[in-house]
Length: 276
Image 1 (tube, rainbow, N blue to C red):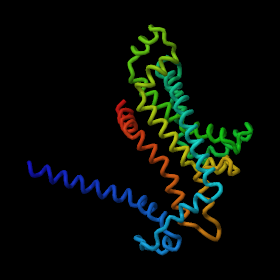
Image 2: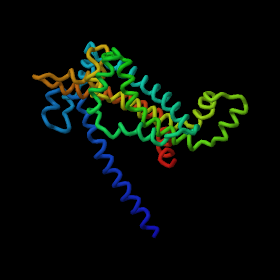
Image 3: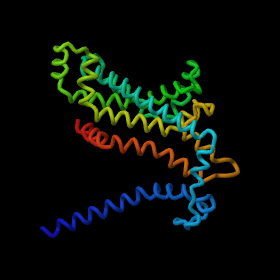
Image 4: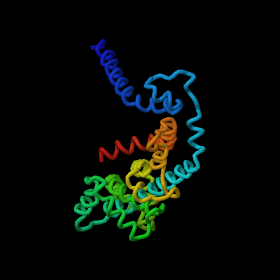
């Protein structure tokens, strides 16, 4: 039995290694290709020669006049969506968790129902709504649109967290003179940080990587984001693979940094949310 344990561990690590190699190989190819010139990428060779490696792709990417604008737009919109989703989602979750309401389960099911439909089905209604509000080609319109896509998940996630927090904490705070909003911000928020991190990270990633809604609601360089900006590296006559791969790597870096910062809270949040 003692000899079987190291063999079992070896088989487990071998299987995990194969899985992660398969998972990370496309990302490794993307990063490597971002340092290759277009001729080298199109040659079909997996490993380039040292003479084919260059930083020129990144230099040319930042020299494009609108790339920094795309980057700033993506960050402003995604960060705003994250804050709005966490704030509104926590208010709604607190209400659903702490107050008795008629039709509570029906409301939560109705909030989750749109997630079962492809986004392309609601694309035209969103455009008509934003057009009637004069919010087409504005940051506010994109922020509201992305927030509406991420709020149902935040509502369900945070409701489960607040349900797991003892109501006695609220009652003790209310006796001490704390208001309802004070209970939420001073008592429940610190306890539910992992859930808030999960909801915020989800909202940030969804907004950061959205292409479909931005392609319809954004009509100028002043509001376009990175996914739309990467499309400018392609034309009917040429596909600039070096710039596309370099731009994609630059687009991935903020989410990787964000994940590395909140990793511990994110993992604990997902685990606790699954249990609760």
